[in-house]
Image (tube, rainbow, N blue to C red; front, side, top):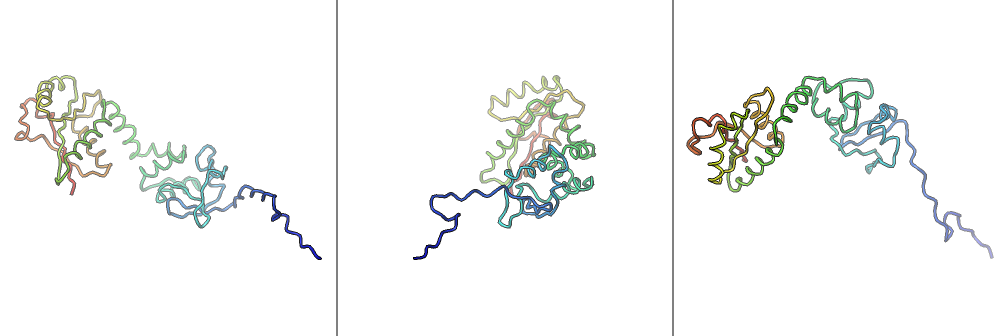
Length: 247
């Protein structure tokens, strides 16, 4: 009687040894948010300390898609300029704020620094945002405005939010009595200021509009209607209505 031996890997009681770590070809294909790129491991590892260098030095942190491409769950549209910089040092000329955000995410520090010197990023980061940091409660007030507008949006095309903007302590003193009257009348007012910086009230109003629009809302502002709120003449210049249009 002949006996057929089983292959060693199939013998009962023996565990199949785990596969070793995946090998990495010098040329790799990437799927970045549905956009496909081909590059080299050398390019991805060019800047030690960056997230890309870390990801492709430790494959345990990298996922693959159904086709075996390395998958990165980020906007693929702006990854091309990141690769161009790593390949040749080329700086983007379009979509600079979006590329700047991606460079921050991937921790491409030299590119972040270079982009911060461009007029678009310098103006936003060093001028406008530094001003807004000097406006107490700015971010919280933006969130409050959106909540108030949404609360009034039921079965309405538009909703409005009353805003008081005071640049100086003296301005605040002029408005204090009238704001108390509005509060007693249960009228909600979002108050910005005072602040210690050069920009004027219109600059603050424009920033509020820009930041709300950046969230996807359609909004405009104007002086408060005297027919609706009948403020004293002394405070008219500090009261504004932000109109949110929903459809």
